[in-house]
Length: 598
Ligand SMILES: [Zn+2]
Ligand SMILES: [Zn+2]
View (tube, protein in one colour):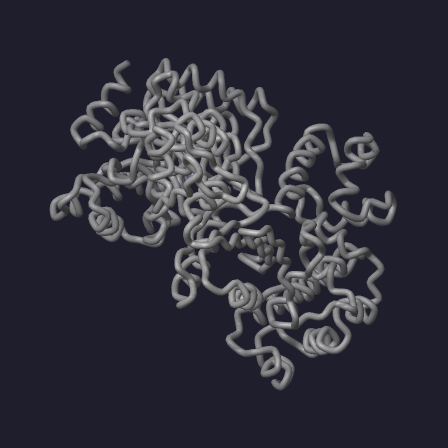
């Protein structure tokens, strides 16, 4: 076992042990030991050679567990610890409101040992009797359970995109690779996807299979293309840890390789399509999808006398045509190039020439500094914005109720205004002084009206009590929309892709009132959020709302998240004129001022 796998096993054993009723302090101590091992630069063999306690928190007991894992695998360790809880039960602890105590009741009193069994029990009403699980807790549990189960079989875009880009880079560096590209759902910027897809033209498919086998630390197993199970639950004694396998499925012109590899604490299924270079554009477009879009293009090609064959050749009058890229394909079909983000459903209806582009963006309107929980100073934020060629940037730190994030009091807001004035004096770009003010559980805002009215830009966001009932939560956000100082609602639905589902809100009602009062919903570009999503973006556009695309950056590299935001905006069919931060500074300020006098 490699280090990552050992740490995963230690954590799993610890979770099971917690469910069996171990002392919480000892459980916590074991968790810290696992963290320390993961963070240590030493290899497992080196750690085992050290005397107990050499690494903080890693004592005799942890070392013995590691040795046990090395020699007898997960089942040996569980046997030695005399743990009788089934391994899948540990996943119950990933659900909100389920601590070790509730999990123990589910496992030992009700025989519910996995998230899937929990879902069945929820559907049958069997959980109504469990103390501590009231109606609203159960409703929330149902939602989170769906997210968890979906997550088990899919990868969120925030993990998929960087992984795909990294793999393409590696492929491109190989001499026998002619072309490689990201394809599939990641290329369309879907939020979650079952597989991370790449397309590659390569002169040697045997080499490609070997490359796939060596990709990262592979933990795949060949199971006929079925879902790859995660976690050490697979670690039976018969499993060979050192020879990961790659599933290969070949049609005559296309090889398909599938690999599961650990990524960001989860496992991602990577799919490689290997095509010959002459058919690359067709294979790239077909695998990008979605299938409706591809069929529309094929039908239009047919109208122009070009047949797109099942083996991805283009045939006109008995002759095979060669195209260099997708744009050629679209041209043959009499269409402009469609960015991948709009190749879904009825995407053919939008005017692709007018879709928002990265170069249209003139500034970032939601950024945190070290005045609250950001890492950069105000001048560093300004430098980061300048480096991206922006015309303006808004400083929007948290308000006081977010104490863990170092939220600002009225006094600190005024101090910050003084520092911003100093930075303004020597800055080439315009700086807006804003705030991300908390919408408190009762709908009030977290700072006095007078303070908010002095600021250039007020973003109001929900950060607490996200699971209030629909009516209450809707009223709460409505109250913020009604507030005269508020310009923007931040990350409206609160979703965290793959981790937390969207809040239960009447978005139709909120949108209508927001449009009436000139309040805007941001598109939060953080790839873990991408909030609001495409459907609501499309609705906002149709009602004439201008949407700011904001990175919500907390440190320098996160300014680059604008790219995700722009791509998400395209999924929502936003044109340049639908996006607030494409406005020149003077017009932007005019717009923010007039909103308050509506
Ligand atoms: Zn926020
Ligand atoms: Zn923020």
